[in-house]
Length: 508
Ligand SMILES: Nc1ncnc2c1ncn2[C@@H]1O[C@H](COP(=O)(O)OP(=O)(O)OP(=O)(O)O)[C@@H](O)[C@H]1O
Ligand SMILES: [Mg+2]
Image 1 (tube, rainbow, N blue to C red):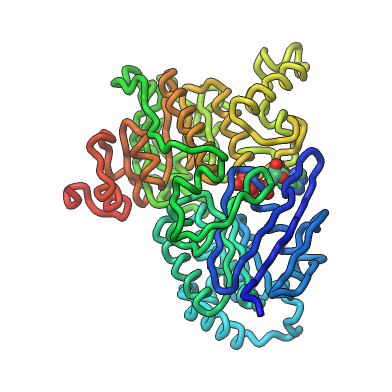
Image 2: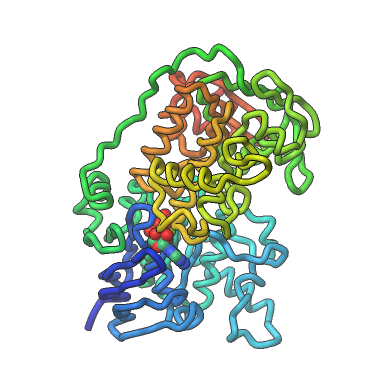
């Protein structure tokens, strides 16, 4: 009699130029939350893709409840009781929650009894503490609610083992807490959860045991109560890690304004008023943090500055020159760099090589093209320099970006945007999905850029990040800037209140 839900032994998975899993041993017990940790590119997603039947391992064995298994497809894995909640949702927007839950379920008879599906969805939602309306359309839901639908989908199909790949990367802190309650309710009923995350504090609070991968191999499995974030970090990188604060060299008073918005208004994708009279300045060498709960206009703010969205009124100027409304190319030419929230869709050309993606922004400049011809050798050299500088894990610079691990995709984008020598850099959650080491690198580069005179608008929900990097903090709530203060005067509590809609005076 074994208590083992999943046991993977000697699992090897090779891709051209990389061994993503190099003899991984991984055992998960029934009823536990088991966290899977490791640096960007360590092999976590590959391992979960093997477990859910998306990839076949080249070597090694998988046992489910003590019996050997091999899955020919994700459906086979799901039939055996293993379900995956992907970071990028696969929901059909115009359909309802209930319709999405039964979608792709071959067992469903042709004529479906809508009532009974709704009952079942309601029952599952109540049992696992996941409030969601079965009749709501997907596009009406928040990101957190959409994730609940993904979880309901796999529960509806009877999954006993749920794998969640960086589920909290897209959630607000409140939504993340709700997810943790759900995970607890599931394990209390004997289900098993495999949880992938880079957030060590979160892993410490939600998991029972933790397995660390490094370079495709298992470093070890530890009981959460016997370890610490410090030990985990050193297991991940193979040496001891200092959690240091990034220090500014010249946190001086900004002399020139490099970005100014006056009375900017704009609409969101559905035509609703998204930004209300937003006025804001960023000085040369200044880091301005925009704190706020996701969905309060941050995306529209970044897009309107990047020229990807038109304002309905107001003015935007970069280094004193007014930028034409809604013209992305003009914004780039004016010196605006942008690290968007949605990396693979708006940031990068996923099917193209690392090299091409790194050249994407400045291929028109004399350095990279001459007489209308691209200077391939210069492009290649630039790309390999950036790969080294940003520690991008890739077999070579010709590899398509879509084959890189999540964190390494992010590094490609950051490297490119930093390399355009911008006047203004807008970064939306720039360290999301990055491992501890990479977070330090990126924060270091942000500070370096600011010290070199770039004005930085740091848009993030991560108060820790904002408070440790920003010189000045503004708070956005329902499309309005509701506070503007020196970072030195800001407290976590006060920012938290303002982000939740408290008035400036009341929060004092
Ligand atoms: N389909 C693929 N083809 C080629 N290489 C791949 C493929 N999938 C993953 N890799 C490579 O395998 C390695 C492990 O990637 P994986 O996505 O498993 O890492 P990860 O631990 O999930 O990292 P992250 O934290 O950045 O998401 C990486 O070097 C990646 O580039
Ligand atoms: Mg991954």
